[in-house]
Amino acid sequence: MNQFLCRAAVRLSLGAAFALLPVAHASAEAAKCTYTPIGQLPLRYSGPGLEITTEGSINGTPAELLVDTGAYATILTRTGTERRGIRLYATGRHASGFGGTSPIYASIVNEFIVGPVRAGRSNMPVVGSFGDTPSYDGILGAPFLFQTDVEISLAGKQLTFFVPEKCGDAWLGYWAQDVQEVPLRRHDEHHKNPKFFVRINGKELEAMIDTGAAISVITADAAGRAGISLDGPNAKRGGDLVGVGKHTTSLWHVTTTFQIGEETVKNADMGVENSGMNMADVILGADFLRAHRVLFALSQNKLYFSYVGGEPFGQRRKLEPWVVAEAEGGNADAQFAMAQAYREGTLVAQDKARSDEWLDKAARGGSPYANLYSGQRLLVQRDYAGAASRLRSALDKLPAERHGALWLYLARVRAGQAELAKSELAATFGRTERDEWPKPIGEFYIGTLSADQLLAEAGGARSEGKLRRCEALSAMGDWHRAHGQAERALALDKQVADGCADTGQSFVKLGD
Image (cartoon, rainbow, N blue to C red; front, side):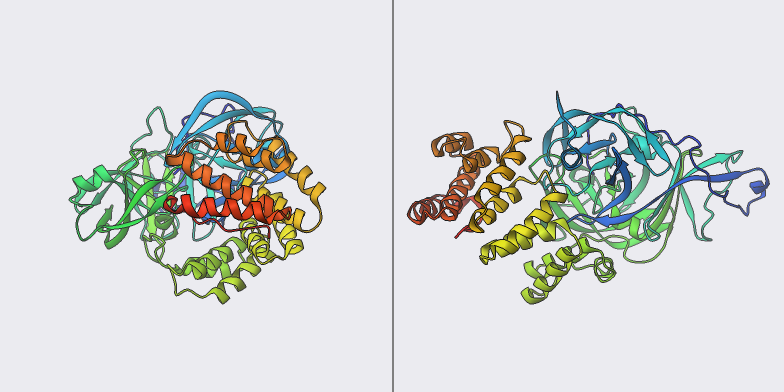
């Protein structure tokens, strides 16, 4: 669902890099049609959002890559660049997405490998900010994924590239008897992802499949054309969507009748969003793909698909069976999702004991976000050595995570490692751009920015400026607490309590 207004300079070409056995066909044209798989990518769920990712390599080190048919280009994240010490160059360009805009940087990568494909020294764009620090190193966008016919089997956790030879209009839905097809509309000049038509409540709308979208959504405009009123009893206000940038867009949940080809889903649980950023009326996300196997036969301008079981749509308003299965199967990121669900009590009945069990299991399994938040929990509980260990483990995998770096500083100071705390934080914020938040807090912590300068950098009394000012006051209180200056910390805590209640944020006291 990430919508990047840039194109990668690197050319990742599948060509004939790798060939598997050709697929046999039962049609009359099978004798002359060969449909050869030329490469396969394993798929897994990873990160706090359990996004669809695959394996790769950047500069000789293993890389986790988001598989995103909704992205305009193949790009790197700050997680990927900072983990490898890749230098960034300003471009003056920006990427747009649900979360607003984010600066695009340029970088030089010595080697980029995905499956059978290898690119040597290349220029690659880097998107600066997301709603949360991404756990993945880069994003495989539509230009890479749609070079050839491509099949996605999320149930089988595999993506396969195919090259047809003398297939013409031969039937390519080889994997089952109930495969259907719908025509594809070729992509436009700005995006490689092809579109097709579906029906919502009987209204024909343009759709596309976006592997980077967790849930399936309809644009607010298209929902109106399909007779869906966001003010009516059928629409329930949901959470917010985040992506590129730091802002959010509104989401509603609606029940519709969905049709694709001859398949009809009644009481389909879908979202409606009002960002104005989507590239089609309907975005079919990972929920749709869990219940369907799809083949983009670009060579024929057809989409082959079949239902493979499970709920075709899900807005993650309950603890869905696939998340439980992933967690019980050992996926540490899914275990972190279980911990969050039991702690928040929105998807299941709140159970903090079970939440703690899942969180510790996820942290031991290596989930960076589990280590990040369990590290903060240990910091609150005054287990400073334990907090430092967990936070250090998290930041090794999330080097672009800045708030966690501030927490690690507090844990180090309270554990008697003030010099190490300062040197680590200086290194982290030394690779942070001048206008990035919370760099001023980091500079205050290491002593290169005064309290007055920090508050001036935080901004004024409205909107984002007020929230940043409150965050700065809270962080200053934490710093004074960690350094044994309780009276000054209490005065700052009072400023937060008196002036920040209307921000909608809670500020946890740390460092005492």
